[in-house]
Length: 156
Image (cartoon, rainbow, N blue to C red; front, side, top):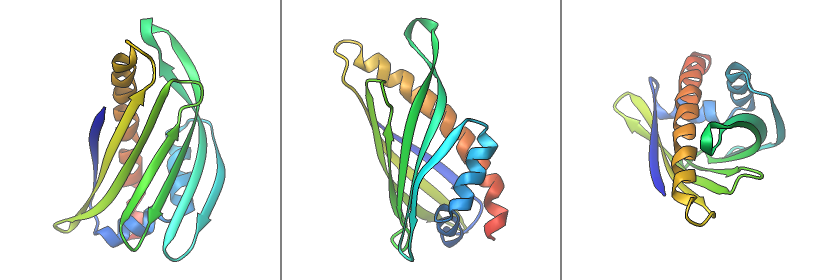
């Protein structure tokens, strides 16, 4: 399943790039979201930023059951090119999620466009699992975008 998500920020792209390339931003965002996490790796130089984070997230399972999953996200940003990628290792869940991202000017503001590919390996039920994962991702994405926007002033 392909899906696009967009985040909008009230600042020029250079400000958003600087924010996304700062480990402190990612840590503040995760703290504000309130879920347990651990930064597993982080690398930065003048051109790239990579962070790998393990999180414990609540998951809605088929049949209404709730569970907790250990999910590892890895973000890689090519700062000068204003593009990046996100890979999600969903652990024991039978789903693969990855996207490419582009930071683009939108007048005086910025849009970050995420083009996701979501794929479940479960025969027959894969489509349902993908839809459930997407609904969960959209909720988390809205929360993360809201928190990121609230941290933007630190980079203006």
